[in-house]
Length: 124
Image 1 (cartoon, rainbow, N blue to C red):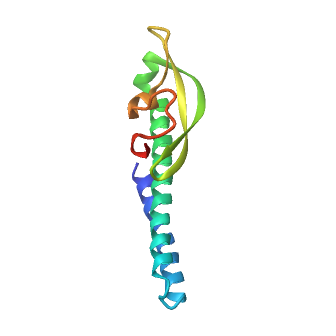
Image 2 (cartoon, helix red, strand yellow):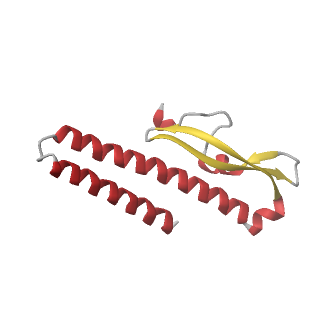
Image 3 (cartoon, helix red, strand yellow):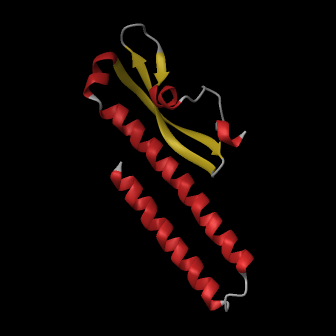
């Protein structure tokens, strides 16, 4: 988890530095473009961070030894979700429950996503 945060912050820092340099190179005359550049960099970084976090959470579920006692992995699917930060695409794994025979996307249940939901609650 720490690596995801560190990577996201490093990438955001580099994009902010680029926006700063463009602003300085323009003679600090285009404040609107500078603000929009910073906002877009932050939005993009937030979307990429969410995507990486969901992928990491799905991998944690797949690697969980205790989960192996109750569920077996059936397949890995890709899910797209539109968030207030933009679209994200992440892996979610279909699990088979050994006890009741049901199938579950445990990540979706963990984060509270309905099966056919394509918009995050905040994006509505």
